[in-house]
Image (cartoon, rainbow, N blue to C red; front, side, top):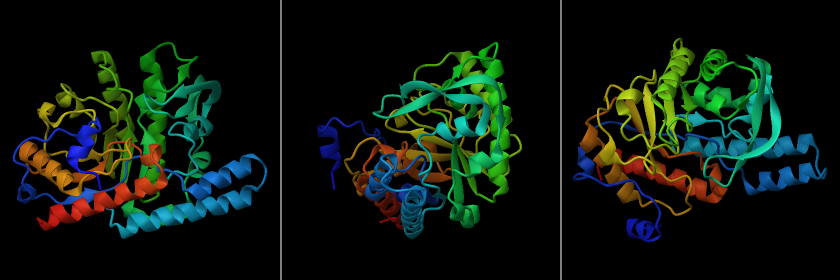
Length: 349
């Protein structure tokens, strides 16, 4: 396992360590869960290629997907994750299911890089007012996923994210488009909540990837609060790839019970005015680097967060972003690290 010194010498950005970082300082129960798309198994990757080349049919590919999902569900359960997420093996990317499920959107020809990662998505085009087709969306989830009940969590784009990921050929202005998406994403969220899940995670990578205009922050807040106003389940708003420095007072205006921070993009030293009535998902497991985190050091970083912010309503150790950027074997090792950190922090070892 790589040490902290090895991580730093390899020029890998790591969360800044501040404060005394004593394990006994952590009095809040620590949770663990995933925050995005998960990488496919080698068998599923190979099977998908065979399906593309007409070597296997739909039934054989579904068998491979179901086997990979069963393995993933089993691993999350064995590692005692507080929420179990669908691995999203039917999702080509975060956006595609909503292109398929929202009338008014279609798939454009343009391949667009997903931020500064070596992955791409087909940018949708908005040609009419969006209207969610609920049955189409539900087909993207594995049938047995809903059996986890309150331990299940779903991951979907925030309305501002979904709009910014698209080309708008319809709305007269940005605000009209974002708020229209917010109304439809409210319907999506309520539909998913009706399935009995415990947490909905909204991903918002666009807003703070670069320094935003104040009007965009206010628009993203208005849209998010419209989407979540009637939800009763736990709501996580996660900001992968985002530098949140200088924006914590505004972030607290989002109607989310838990805020997810990418600590490879945001420094702990820059966190000010964080209200401990909200929960915090600490993105300190690097989903964009195959080097494994040192368990003792991650434990110390979690303690540093508590030393700085105080006891939090909800404290979780999570990846900073999707694990899909990693090989499946590495992703599973990082999931094991998360589980071991949780054990050590809670035992005070």
